[in-house]
Image 1 (cartoon, rainbow, N blue to C red):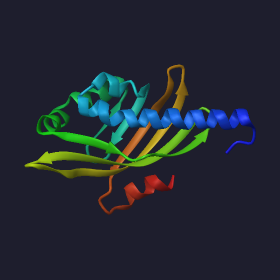
Image 2 (cartoon, helix red, strand yellow):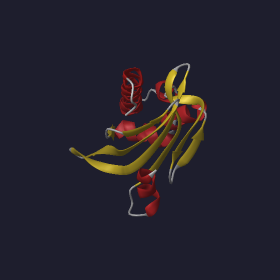
Image 3 (tube, rainbow, N blue to C red):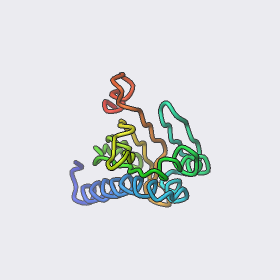
Image 4 (cartoon, rainbow, N blue to C red):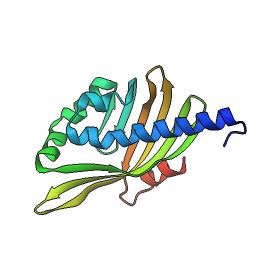
Length: 151
């Protein structure tokens, strides 16, 4: 934690804004709000969904939400659930790591369809904090996902 009260207050405000930004992702994705999801990223931001796709820029990120896979999940019932992030601040940049679970409706219940590690690289912009890059890797027992938590 920074030494002075002004720096501590700014760090607390920054961490709160980043938590809020990450918390918005799931509800926006579940609502199918592709524009809202894309707006969480910087204009040239990147969303790297391991084993699926790398989207670069807001238009490609929006296209993930508008795509057949996501629309199919929404049609059957799904929920994007994200854990509270651990945040490391560095001035106008930050890194946050957390878990995400994509639940899909099956019969009368839900099952975990994708459980992942996430690394969010964030930047302070004129629009506020935005995602510069998100790495999402399935926790499938391999080292790639676990490595995201070590950064």
